[in-house]
Length: 223
Image 1 (cartoon, rainbow, N blue to C red):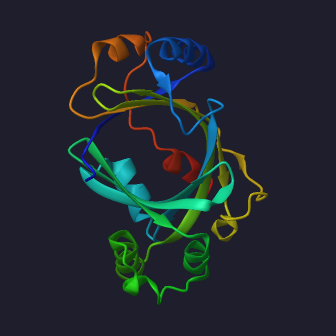
Image 2: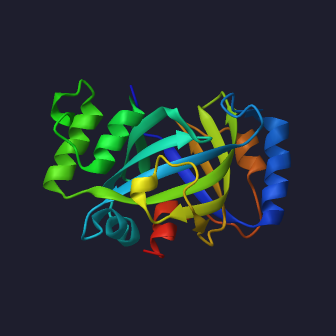
C-alpha cells in the first residue's frame, strides 16, 4: 500500500551536480531500472482551463494533487498513470499500469471505457476529467540519474536537461519536437520514516536550501 513520504528538492548548478554524483556513487547504489546510470522520463500533465493544478502549486495550497501519465526511454509498451498528492508537506504517489491504446483514447477524448475499468485510478481520472475539466496540458521530458539506499527507503535523483512539448496529442510520438525549458538541475530526495545521516551528510552543499521546484510549473511558463 502506498504511503506518504518526505520529499526535499534543491535547485543546483553543474558543479554541485558533479560533486553530488560522486558522493552518491560512493554511499548509495544505482537504481536497477537505470542500467546505464541514466534514463529519460517523459510525462504528460493534466490541468483545466483555469489552471487549477498550476495555481494550487504556485499558491502553496496545503492539500493538492496532480495527474500525469509517464513512460521511460521512449518505450510506450510500459506506461503508468500516476496521481501525486501533497498534504502537510508529505507526498503520496499512486501509480497504476495503463496501456498505449488507453492513453491514445484519453488523448482523443474517448472516455466511455474509463468508468468500466477495474483500476481505481483510471476511474478517478475520469471523474476529474468530467467534473473538474482536466485535460492533457503539456509534455515534460528530462534525464534522470537515480540512486537508492535501502535503509529508510531513500531515493535520490538528479534531474536535468528539462524540455517541454506544447502538443499533448503527440505524447506517444518519440520524435515530437521539444524545446529547452531553461530549468536548473534538480536534486530530489525522498524517504520514509527517517533520512540516514550518511545520506544527509552526503547531500550537504553550501548555500543550497530546500525549495518547492516543479518541472510542470517551470514548463508552463511557456504556455
